[in-house]
Amino acid sequence: MRLHPIALPTPFPVGPVNVYLIADDPVTLIDTGPKTKEALEALRDGVRRAGLRLLDVRRILLTHTHEDHCGLAKTLRDETQGAEILVHSWETGHRAARLQYEEHRALLVRAGVPDEEVERMRALYDSVRAFTDTLETDHYSELRDDEEIRFASGALRVVHTPGHTPGSCSFVREADRTVFAGDCVLKRITPNPILAPDPVNTEKRFPSLAEYLVSLARLRAFSPTLLYGGHGEPVTDYEEVFNRYLRLIRERQAEVIKLVPPKGATAWEVARDLFPDATDIHSFLAVSETIAHLDLALDEGKIEIERTPEREVYRKLTSR
Image 1: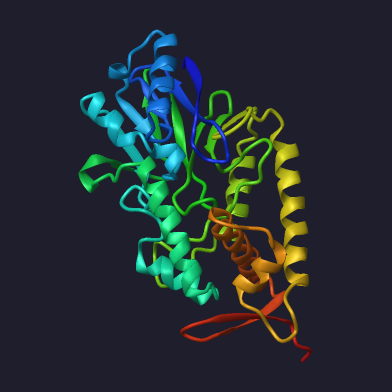
Image 2: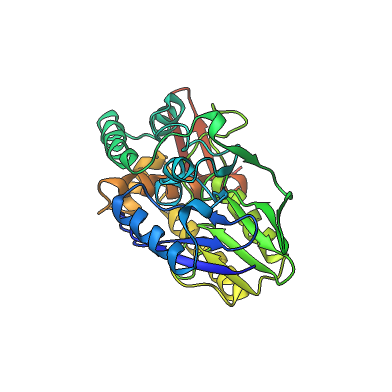
């Protein structure tokens, strides 16, 4: 497989996003970048430098459906006259804007986020929505865990790696243990476990951090020699990144547990103590990360929870 990494500009604080052109039959693109004129021109230029045209792209694999990764999918489908788009069925961002669903709102309210803050978050995501187009159900096919994506000279194995989002997928070339991991693994950034409804039961919250730890272990089992992420440089020492992630996750969890008072607190209250300067989109990311750590601590029996239909209050363990 001839691989051509292409870095595309984004309007987001994370900076450029990496997409990957595989110049084999069929010509395949992993992720697309955001729906901006600048990203489209950079993509067109990168494909041209690989000796191809956008029209040659016949297949688009989406690692997940955040705007910086999937925003141009529909544009490219139209421009290439029908390139196949594949995405995991647990992804929902390709159907409509995040936080537009009532189940998202219910999760935030249950976490103690004030109504005015919920509306502020929704307004911010409405502005982000401009950087992608909704995909209708007949615009894409489903990626399935463990299936093979075939090429003339080899294959990529689909590995469902939930955590950052419920439907995040990685792609593994087992012949040389190369991995395309989207935002599951990044060399210099610890991915944020984003708050989302559980795809199986949308009244529940997806256990993002617990699932993420399983995903990291699944990728480790392939003994990756080279891992391409959605942002930044490739990872050449997966074991170092794996152990660093585990250490940072445990350190952050310890911080979160310390902030849970004996009288109890909502996830929003803990998040405000943990990230006092978080504003705008970072308020949502802060409460997402805090909830993920609280849920993991709860699963591990390190804290308690009191649930009502309206609120969840976390407490330190009481002596029995």
